[in-house]
Amino acid sequence: MPLRYTLRQLEYFVAVGETGSIAAASQQVNVSSPSISAGISQLEEELGSSFSSGIMRRG
Image 1: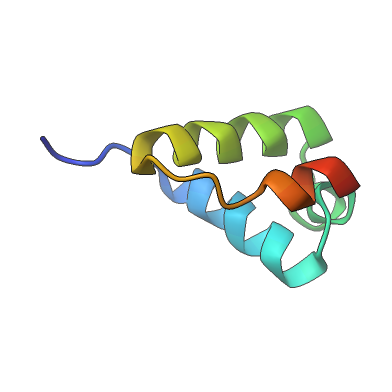
Image 2 (image 1 turned 135 degrees about the vertical axis):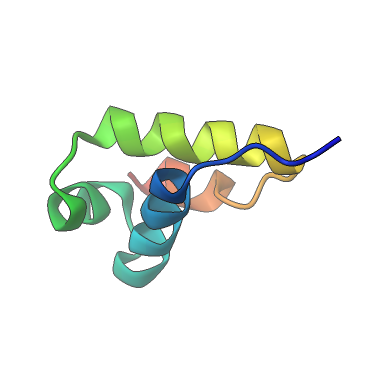
């Protein structure tokens, strides 16, 4: 079954990695923090991995 994720989700993931927090990433890409969290959660679900649990706690 093919993976289904969007470039936007990848953009959010990269932004969080670069900035170190969801709040800073949301400012960088000009979207709300809940949108960043939701996009990353969907990406994690699609990939079957939880790579942001520490970042999600930091906000």
